[in-house]
Image 1 (cartoon, rainbow, N blue to C red):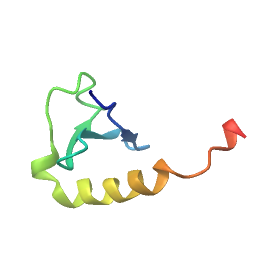
Image 2 (image 1 turned 60 degrees about the vertical axis):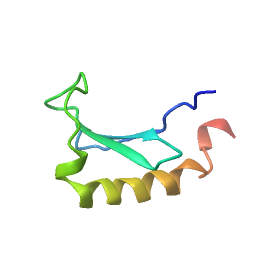
Image 3 (image 1 turned 90 degrees about the vertical axis):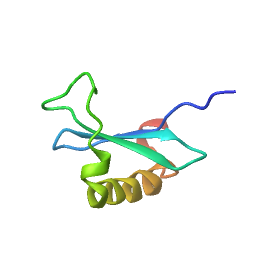
Image 4 (image 1 turned 90 degrees about the horizontal axis):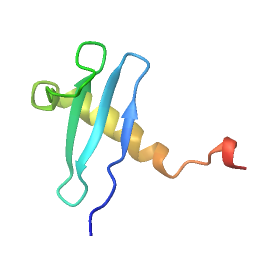
Length: 68
């Protein structure tokens, strides 16, 4: 069984993708220069990955006003 990836896109155009939920692997892309998501920037920006990961995890279970 394959799980769907969760992702977060910032207003700056960064996209954090949960690549492997079981292993805690995330990918980071700059959509302003790489809209096809070919270059994973995660290894070069570990602090940014951690920052965005915390936001993603916090928002996953937050209430969605559009569904209420």
